[in-house]
Amino acid sequence: MHKTVLYLFHHGQVGKDALDADLELMEKLLSESSTDAKDGRFRFSFDLPDTATLAQAAVDEEHPEPGERNTTQMCVPRPGERIMVLKEPWLLLILNKLKTMEIRRAAAEPGKTWLACEGRVYGAAKISSCVQITHEEFEATRAQHQHLGNMPPYTKIYALKLQDIIRLDAPVPYYRLPATAPWMVFRAGPGEKRIRGSKRKRALPEEDAALQIQDTLLDGTTSGTRMASPARKDDE
Image (cartoon, rainbow, N blue to C red; front, side):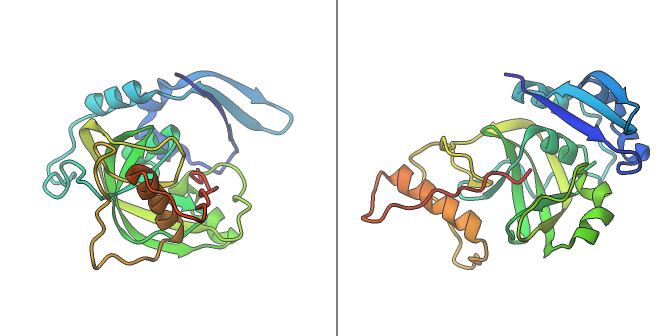
């Protein structure tokens, strides 16, 4: 199912050179364009690719130069491993290495994470750092996070720097609950338990809250106190 989104490209906010590396792929998404002469903004309207289109983009991607992609560390997700849930446009930019910073309203633990959209894992990345940023820093890093509008009006904004980005040869489906959450853990089916390493830090209240709800629903257990569902959807 296709959804339509509208991007407003302001002069000077996104450099042309940053898009040239993947111009052919992005042109496939553009369906029409118009210019608002009054305020000097270019308006692009295009359909987002569905999961099948995104998977085909992975197959059609050029083979990387030797040593560019790390194929020995991460082959397929394992039960219990962390998944960052993204919307399709952001996932596409990350997999093509045009977006190297993710903006979130809550802190995330540095380390490996899988990248997914709509119940399928398409790649992986390493969160090298997670820092709270100011409005000035948000503006200065637009080329990295690729946000075109104003800074999100959250109390705190965190920048997650991404590196060692890889794309899987084929997407891997995972079991997900109907509720939308910015973080998930990999499970092939509802019967699998969540695995958390003994040394894993519990520094992610947003992630932990979502995972606790998943465990409760998957195990079929209830408690006397109703657990609040995380209201925060994926920030992007």
